[in-house]
Length: 101
Ligand SMILES: C[S@@+](CC[C@H](N)C(=O)[O-])C[C@H]1O[C@@H](n2cnc3c(N)ncnc32)[C@H](O)[C@@H]1O
Image 1 (cartoon, rainbow, N blue to C red):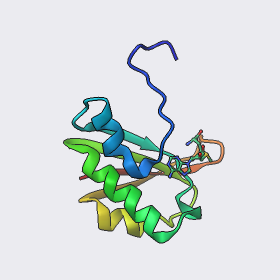
Image 2: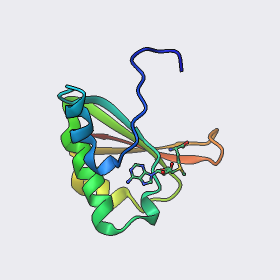
Image 3: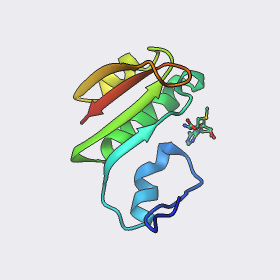
Image 4: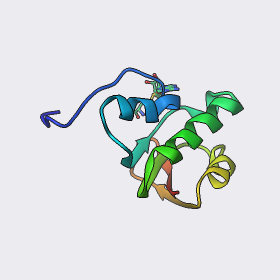
């Protein structure tokens, strides 16, 4: 990607706030996430979602694409608002969760 703002970071999503702070970034405007939450332990899943919500600015949002609804109750307990859409044209067709703090 030829954008000088683009940075690749090797690290766990569970410490996204630390990763932002190391780059002098106070918060994230948007998070896009396609992690395999379904294969994670319950505690890691909650940790990543809570950490992501805390990393967002007040007007920020998180978009997650998933192939099952496993995450939905976790999102609904972590975020103030969760909207679910379906993207038929993805390969495989995917559920899109749009979450705001
Ligand atoms: C199925 S791939 C999806 C990759 C990407 N989202 C995409 O759609 O191209 C899952 C990726 O999640 C990463 N991953 C799994 N657990 C993670 C975690 N706790 N923090 C950050 N990345 C993680 C894995 O390293 C792997 O690259």
